Length: 158
Image (tube, rainbow, N blue to C red; front, side):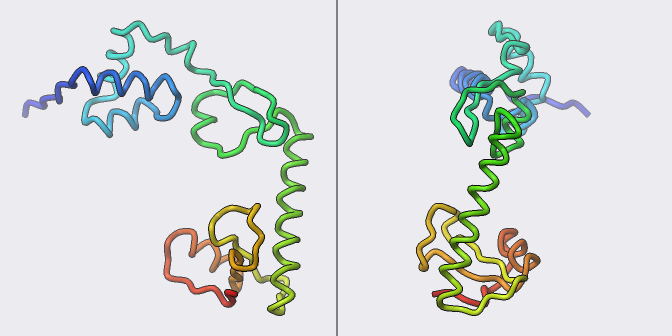
C-alpha cells in the first residue's frame, strides 16, 4: 500500500508557521489539522529556518500580578493560569474563594444552601456575581457532569 501525503499550499505553510510560532498549537495538532505528518510540519519549520529551541519558551503574564514570566510552550498550552511564585498563586486562589463565598452569600438570600451544594457561574465568569448568573447544583458530581455537556438540571436558578 502506498501512502501519499497532502501537498501544502503556500497559504497553509504560512498559517502553520505563524500558528506554531505563536505557541497556539503543537506540531501534532497542526499535522492533524492539515492532514500531514508531524515530521512534515517539522521539515517545513526547518526549511523556513524556524529555531525550535528558541520557540520552546514563551512569555506569559502572571494571572495574579501581571508580571511577565517564561514558561515552556507545552505548559502554556496545557494550563489556563500561570503564576510567578507561590505567593501569587495563593493570592489568586484566595480571590477565587472570595468570589465563591460572595456567590454563595447572594444565593443564600433566595435559596437555602447545604454545604454540598455547588454554586455555578452560568456565563463562566466568576467576576459576574449577579443573581441572574448564579445557579445551584445538588453536588460536585452534577456540576462536573454539567461541564461535560451531560443533561443535568440545576436545583435552583433565579
